[in-house]
Amino acid sequence: MEKFTVLEGVAAPLKMINVDTDMIIPKQYLKTVKRTGLGKGLFAEKRYRDDGSENPDFVLNKPAYRKAKILIADDNFGCGSSREHAPWALKDFGISCVISTSFGDIFYNNCFKNGILPIAVSPHDLEKLFDDAERGANATLTVDLARQEIRGPDGGAVKFEIDEHRKHTLLNGLDDIGLTMVKSAKIGSFEQKAKAARPWV
Image (cartoon, rainbow, N blue to C red; front, side, top):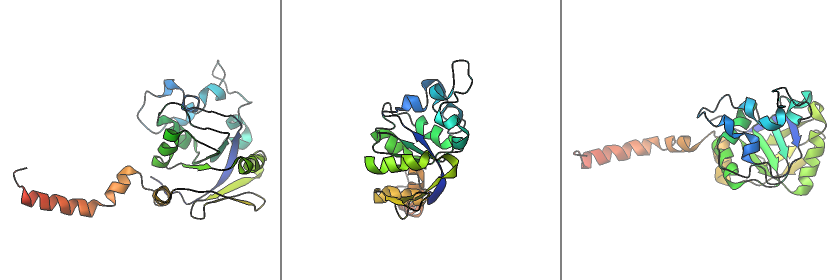
């Protein structure tokens, strides 16, 4: 997993509450177990019309936000079912940070396991960030995980809280397998001792 240290990029404003994982990645895209290729299905029911053409009114189809790295959304983002394809689709599209006032618990946990930083902020701070995002490609946000702050184009900063363990895993690019491999020397030593003590196993 890639390390998440400082992310600078365009933020796309998604002013919708209760965006569930089915909206993030519709069920027809769940046939794969690969983490790549899902970006095209991200918000498919909003991004595309019935004939398959793009909906020009959807934020990610607007020229300023086609390469957004940050998504700013309203309350309760990622609620609904537990599909891990939701963070996979966001990441494959190019989004590595989602900012909202609240998240669905399972989606929130899945983000950390897939290199995405979900940030919960106050409603007041969210409105400031929406204002920044609505300036389009002319205004970028900087998300600094080590300092736990989001810096706007005018120099203002929004501080955020994050669990220390989760912060550590993102800063060091460690998913669950990576966390286990950090202890590979101890695991190897244990296995050697176990084999010596019980050679018949």
